[in-house]
Length: 376
Image 1 (tube, rainbow, N blue to C red):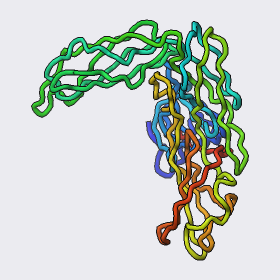
Image 2 (tube, rainbow, N blue to C red):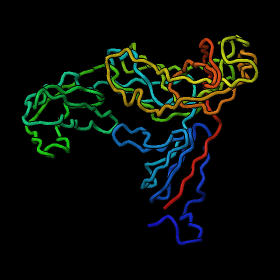
Image 3 (cartoon, helix red, strand yellow):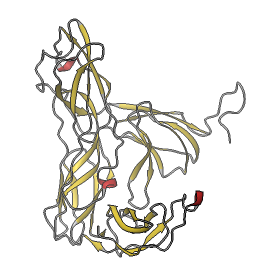
Image 4 (cartoon, helix red, strand yellow):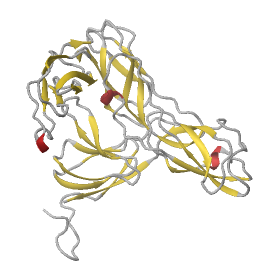
């Protein structure tokens, strides 16, 4: 296997129609035929693998400012490049509801995303350490057996008290378990090195909880990007629950979208206090403001762990120490966000900045993104 056939020779595409893949917002491309690939994703696209447990697509690379460079062996079925810019990719449960005897139907108000609710089968947050073990130098790795296909894997970590395991803390409670999972402790590979002792003997047991409540909400298909209007706030698609015999379940969508500009009216054109006389550059940056769960279910990875966020960068010229109209801002990098960030506007470092000015972003998507793919 090699990158090239020889010095001065053009490498073969080896069955791939093209080594450039341009995807509109919302589009995906399965990586095929099977084989080794070198892939540099565009800045709004990610490399994904199909998870056989949750049966959703998970990001495994890409999405950084310069694009991610990855080397993978693709089987022609379970790996893809996805441009999810502007789409709903997950949800944070804000109310788990009650009385559900079967999974309700979940419908998005916009974007045509496809959802699956899971009822019950979460691992109780109280895990019983039945044997603390002995001689541990480092906390052992906690492995919890997987649920049936279509469920959510529970995850946890252990804490030591001296050289014994004192507690096991759930990170993800999981969902869809039909029986209490098995918990296995795997020693940290540093155990026994450099004169350290080798821990052994720790055991723990778990029980299930969440009966007749929604324990996870999975996005099976991100659908289409959400329409937006320049200069205006973009509305999150709402999720409605119907059927299943229960009531009161609610969730907030987790987006994979970007800043396309500033909202009109969020600051007055000509606001003073930023920059100086003449054409002074001002920049706008903002951190993500993700949806916050107020339910008792912990499933971070399938509620809010599906997007690799990146901070945006917008620039404009502040003439005479005043800000230009919102339409004058240039989006250098729209970033990647799950919520709508509050932008901080400051002068560049060569000019003393005045009062801090903030503005709300217009959230949306960019029409296309190009990735580079070479079969090795």
